[in-house]
Amino acid sequence: MRIQFCGADRTVTGSSHLLEVNGLRIFLDMGMYQGARDEARQFNQYLPADVKSADAILLTHGHLDHCGKLPVALRAGFSGPIYCTPATAEVARIVLEDSARIQQEDVEYMNRRTRPPQDPADQPLYGPADVPNVLKRFRPVNYRQKTDLGKGVSFTYYDAGHILGSAYVIVEWSEQGRPHTLLFTGDIGRFDTPILRDPFPLPGPVDQVITESTYGNVSHGPISDVGPQFLEAVKTVIARKGRLVVPSFAIGRTQTMLWYLQKFIVEKQIPQIPVFVDSPMGCEATAAYSKFTENYDDETRALIGTHDLFGVSQMTCAVSTQQSRQINNTAGPCVIIASSPTCEFGRVLHHLERSVENPNDMVLFCGFIPPNTLGRRLQDGEKRVRIFDRWYDVRCQVRTIHGLSAHADGDELLRFLKPTLVGQTEAYVVHGEVPQSEAFAGRLIAAGIGRATVPAMESSAVAYTAPSLRTGEVRRTDQE
Ligand SMILES: [Zn+2]
Image: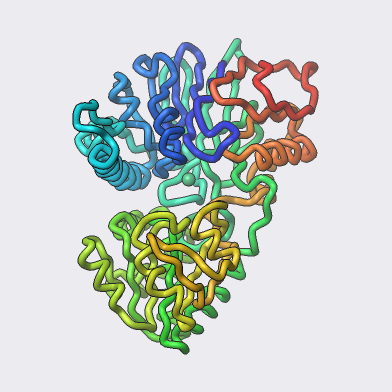
């Protein structure tokens, strides 16, 4: 067994790992790096050698940083199956089509602005025409259904509770007559959130775990605070006839906010007010969430048939820019959910332009916003911010609901991993910034796991370590 770390190592984006076992070469995720333009381009053009000869890709979920490089792999000659849950196949389609369109528009814009006519034009990594080729390779597999990959290797998906269709995967095989198991967590969600089932209890200890650590050393607010905090925010803007602007991810967070709003309306805690989803991808994702009802938890399943879960019949989905502009002319009270959460780009900027100087309006963030972004400046309480090319005084209210993260915090990750916090398990801690990953590796050791490594990009881990060699140390470099 050999693991090659090909992305999301000491960072939170670009998830990809290559597992070589019994002569099979299996990629766990094929994610795109999202970050500064040149850095992202360099990473996203990189593929481990011989992607062409890989036997399969196991996709954990449809976020771009987990599936966004699938078209690049196909362009490089990969022609095997791409396994994922049925709902992930749909979410990944939405995400890849959106990514292809944005890349194409972005490259055309940059070529027009910065390239002299005699220079060869930049090309996008892939365009809309590449996406159908990826979709043809999808092999949907249900949760908890063991799938044989040949050569004595099989895998099983289990609910990860992160976004619609998300899964963690356990790969099983036999090596030198001994059964082996490897867990790849993908992204693990919080427990007790609405809509989706919780992360499925880990069936037992595994030999190796590749675990995310996005918030490995962070505590989110309690999930039980989310409903009351959101309700209070909505009631405040209704009383002031203001606009509630929610900068949000299109997939997951948007549907959670819609679910809460509809609950408040059905329970008559608030009147029916105009609700807008100003994001083409958010609208498509909401349709997907409405369709895959088999992924719901018991609470949400019980509501099917009693009311419109996401208020789809009442809300306005803005797909075109014309529809988006009309929202901006709407007076309060209303709720506008628009991307992006960082407020660095996207339609939310137009709504912020109108709302930041209005004391009756409120901007509501759903979780931590990365530093050096407009969203973070607003969240930090700056009194003057620049939107597009103009400075604005911030007179609106700004609030944050911290419990709404789509990722488990450190305690929740430990709760999920509990069955495998044992001496014979070795952990590779990925998908986190270095301080989070190192702290979480330390917490794993303290909780009893045999060994924890924070691997470097392009490093590899080889074979199974005999119990006598276990040191309990936290390794940072690719010593193996
Ligand atoms: Zn994710």
